[in-house]
Structure formats: C-alpha cells, structure tokens
Picture 1 (cartoon, each protein chain N blue to C red):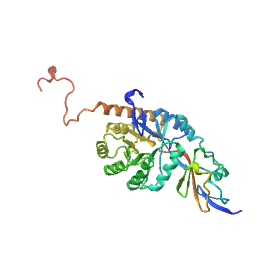
Picture 2: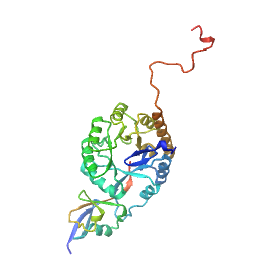
Picture 3: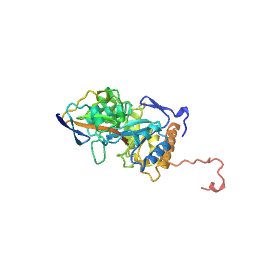
Length: 69
Length: 267
C-alpha cells in the first residue's frame, strides 16, 4: 500500500494514500465538533472533510478553541 | 449593573446592555476566569484558535465554560502577521464558533504588538466581502481608521496603548479625533487599559465601550477588579451622557457669595 507523509500540527504523520481529512481526524482521535482545519494555510470547511484527500507533503493545521484577548 | 432600556445599545447587529468586552486569557485558573467574566457583566468575550493537541478531545474545559456563560464570543486572529493568515483564521473561526464576528488583529511589530495597518486594511476588505462583521484592532491613527471604514468596517477598535502594557490612553487627542470623525460608528478602545480610571476616561471620551483582558486577569484579585471595571465603565458612560461642565481657567466659588458673613468684608 502506498503511504504518504503529512504534517499535522507540525508533527510528521504517515497515512495510506487517498486518506481524507475526515479519516485522518478519526485516525488521530480528534473530535471534530469544535475544530477547524486548514490545509497548506487554506481553510477547509467541515462539509469538505469527507471528500478532501490529503496529498504527500500537505501541511495540516487542526485548530480548537482556546482563551484569547 | 443596571439593565434598564436606556442602557441598551447595538453593535455588530446585536443588542447589548454592558459596554465592557472582556478577554478570556491569562487568568490564574479557569474558575477565576469564569467568576471574573461573570463579575464584569460583560456580554462579549474574546476567544482564539490554536493547534489542538493530537489525541485530546476538543471542546472540553475552557470552551465549555465559555459556552455555558451564554455570552457572545468574539474570536480573534491574534498571532497573525499577514492578511492571508488572518483571513484563513477568520474563516476557521466563523465555522468553529458559529459567528461572523471577528476581531481582526494583524501584528506588524513584535516589540509593541502594534497592528500592521496595511495588512489589516487588506484583510478587512476581503473579510467584509465574505460577510464578516469585522472588529478591527487598530492604532489611534485617524487615516488608518478612515481606510478601515472605506474597506467596509462598521466598527473600529483603536488601541489605548500596546496590548498588555496597562499604560492607559496614551494619546487622548487622537482618540478624540477618531470619535469626532465617526460620531455614529461603534468605537471600542481595545488594548492598553490597566486601571478602572482608564476605562472611565475612555467612556468619557464618548467611546461606546472598552475591551480589556490583562487588567482584570493579572490583577491581584481578578474578580474584584472585574467588578471595579464594570462600575467604571458604567460611571464613565453615564458621565458622558450627562455632559460634563466646561473647564475654566480660573476658580469660581461654588458657595453663594451673597450674604457672605463679616470676616470677608474687609478683604
């Protein structure tokens, strides 16, 4: 099976080729109710998680609510 | 705090009674944060987005406390240094927090965290077109304020002084100029407020509200300080609405001079 390497929140992760954002989040135990995702600094809306496949070298940011001023 | 009809005001399409916006960062504990926000009477709380640790459940802890407070959340784009970054964070925040409000913050200098006016205006143009209600964190520069309004902003948030400095209102002249240039626009003093007296001054200048965080979170007793600020904001606003007397260069006795008794007759 072909594998791809993706950066998730700065950590290098290896996945099967064709993995979608939804599958990646589940695989890494993210609970997607309160989080936002950007791939290569571009916002990816939640309704696109299921159909968006990650590519090798993608940089994924998974952000969640924190305190702020 | 009074909640009568005369205290109602509108900003970003929402009706509020409190004129104090408060941040959710830097408190000694989540419990103190919760109590301080409640004590402040603030109906708008700023929040942010950061990388979620892998294998940790999102939505726990902090965010649950904020949700349970039943306040309006104002997500920020803190930490962004370009229009592009701020736009992406705003888009993510809109989805995560379910609001089109965004505190647009694009930093241009790490030393004083001064907003970058060029990138802020650029981001504001895009975000307004995308349907955001942009609350732009800006300096007290009148021309930048005008550019933000030209970009479609309906609200301005000039700083009093650099974020977290607690120095108060460094340039009341500039802040007055912005108030006079935009008499009907909601204006919030954002950043730099350190003491309740600063809040009173901001409100006496005719500003519609203040946004603060460090002044409460870093106080020795954050909950008591939150209450002090609530009273200061209310007093300042009431004083502004009541209309201050004209300053005079010379003293003028307040006690009637007619009927002054004998000991003044030889003077």
